[in-house]
Amino acid sequence: MKAFEKNIRKVEPYVPGEQPQHKVIKLNTNENPYPPAPGVTRALEEMDTDRLRLYPDPTAGPLVEELARFYHVNPDQVFVGVGSDDVLSMCFLTFFNSEKPIYFPDITYSFYKVWADLYRIPYECQKLDENFRIVKEDYYKENGGVIFPNPNAPTAIYEELDVVEDIIAHNQDVIVIVDEAYVDFAGRSVLELIDKYENLIVVQTFSKARSMAGMRIGYAISNPMLIKYLNDAKYSFNSYTMNQTSLICGVEAVKDRAYFEAAVHKIIETREWAKGELAKLGFHYLDSSANFIFAMHPKYDAKELFEALKANNIYVRYWGSERIEQYMRITIGTREEMEALFDFLRKYMNR
Image: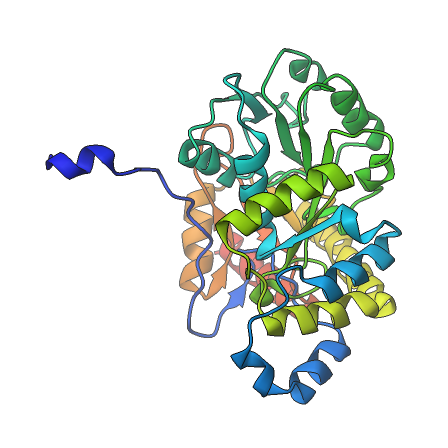
């Protein structure tokens, strides 16, 4: 080892899903299969490109105000970032500074471990039960903060609001972050509790329900004090995180509530139909409340299925990690894409 290597920060990076450059049926990264709201297209077509020579609004004012209107909160309760990953990373940096370990589930979004390692934050993973559900009592112990997704990823399981509130109520002396990337496909949001618990931060994204993964827009909603701390950290890191194009298109995406709700309904409808098709083929799956299904087949090895699908240009997600080595995560695509998936599986299983 060279002398300078001793002072290099080394981390095990997050591994994102594959982004193939050729034509495939892409069911591996939980993107929305439908285009964003029509207003986004109009905004791009009408955008004054001369604005691109100027720095964007560092406060992301128009987008913050539109989100505040949509969720019936004040603008000083909204923080935006470059995708929810950027928002969550900033939350780790800002709020998880205790010597006590933060808590999150053992099967969950794998970026949590990466950020904890990157920022030198101690952590302990709390095991999901045999049904892959959060054991709320495991979060009663003293800790340095709590974070978990709801619905969880990659399991797609949604915990009812009373379970989430119980965890918040038992952790009043630390920050609790609820990562709601998939909540629009599930049930009630913990945003209902924002005014009740001053230690609660809710993080959501434009990448799933709003069909804008390519724009990289995420946001947090909390009380003004915690949002100010987040902005202070952001301005110390990079004042101009949200580009002009994302700001303009993000506003248009939020404005069109009817389009947003219709697209979500279409995905939920396809998801419920897909559950039935999986059951007919003998798959076992967790009861999804997201835009994906976590499934396994008792007679077929998950890695072999994954490879066979990929060889036929159908991409799903496979980890092979402890406890979930026989599961694949299947994003809900269009009805036509899902039918192609099931056509292949039927042929594969009837060889």
